[in-house]
Length: 202
Image (tube, rainbow, N blue to C red; front, side, top):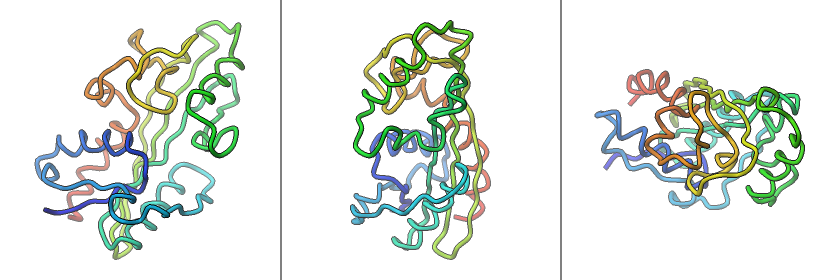
């Protein structure tokens, strides 16, 4: 079975990407592995980029080089208008390493306490990069706009999903099943542009 590695040890991102790959007939039979599943549990490249695209490319190139397999890398974040675009590029490590998703969500809600819905605007951004061991790369960005909820809601998803409500609905991403979330997600938007180009390399 052909194999792709996803440049993360985040099982939630892997599950999201598996659903997206399944939508493309030519990629449906690919086995998608996290770095840990590929045997590289200590893999942790330094993300020195100044934007999401640069960090996605750093991770994709590193994963492809280390494993010798085609690699997908996602660098994504939540940008909150009232926090001057934060957590932004530091979304994964905001407040420091080892801080739980629940604590990060609580910190955002505390900072936005008392603000109206109109002042709670936010968006998710995803830079999705593809790299081959040869060094060839492609990258695309996607966005999902919405606002921050007044409290965490839902048990699905991961990260900031329980506090983010996409435009056009009243549910947080964590209240949606994975298929519904993937229809509107920032990752899906990036994948829609990347997949056709990726197929020319595989």
